[in-house]
Amino acid sequence: MPAFATEVYKVELAGTVAETLITRLDQACRRFALDDLEGQNFSKRVGYLGYTSLKSIPDLAERDEAFAELREVVEHQASLFANCTQFQLGDRKLRVNRLWISLIGPNGARSSQIHVGSVLSGTLYTTVPENSGALKFEDPRLGMMMHAPPRLPSARLYRQTYLPVIPQRGTLLLWESWLRQEVTANLSTHPSVSIGFNIDAED
Image (cartoon, rainbow, N blue to C red; front, side, top):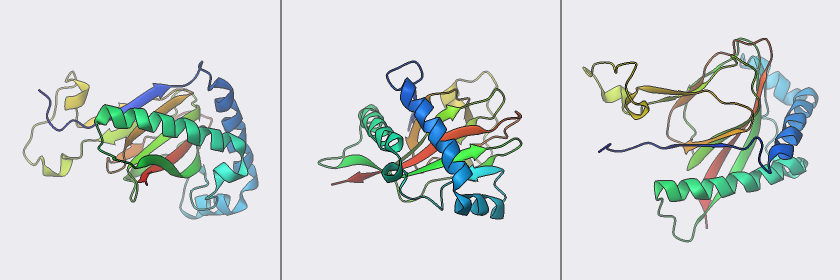
């Protein structure tokens, strides 16, 4: 009887009706990365090895139709996740309130973080070179474990202290925004490309 389960939702979109959308999104991400000087400068300023539109382009879905289509896909998957986790939303709907692009270059990583001000967060991967890193989730109870012994390497996933998820092209992940996660180092010679998003419950 697992207690206080924390769900991480995963769906593979490659090879589905979303296949063409994944390709269009990947092309759009690379185009924005080349053209967005403000995002390039921000990435350099904070030591981000690659590119992010997080602080420079708040309206991706208005600028490119592919991101508007992605928003619809994500909101549909979020409703499925809400059913899985048995959220009591009442009349509120889960809506994407922010999208951003991330290109993580060789040796790039993202430090441990949470997403403030949203209900769910997630990522869709459009390019995943071999050995380009994992999204590693952290047990939210970690700071309170004190004298708890480490888990066996063979322990079931829900008993592990960390859960690394190795994505592939078309992997879409969703999790509750308070769940801490990090991106491990990209050990390939090519950038990974993904799109992050936050989701809120709106009337």
